[in-house]
Length: 77
Image 1: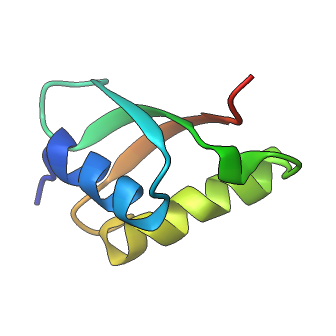
Image 2 (image 1 turned 90 degrees about the vertical axis):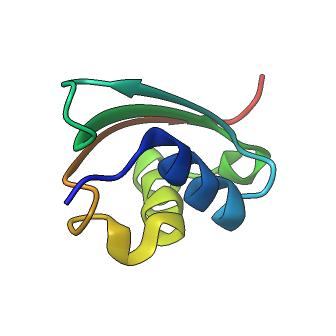
């Protein structure tokens, strides 16, 4: 099973409405992605907490249709 980048972005923005999301393919298989997510919701949170918010937004897709996601998160400067 594979997941297109547009669906990853949609899920993240659905869970974190102000998120700015950039998705890059790590391999050309719709299965291995890198995402950079910036959101004001990340302010004052640890990297672990930021990543947990993204994983929560992705729900059951993470580890299912979405096999691998390299994640970078930050609050706006």
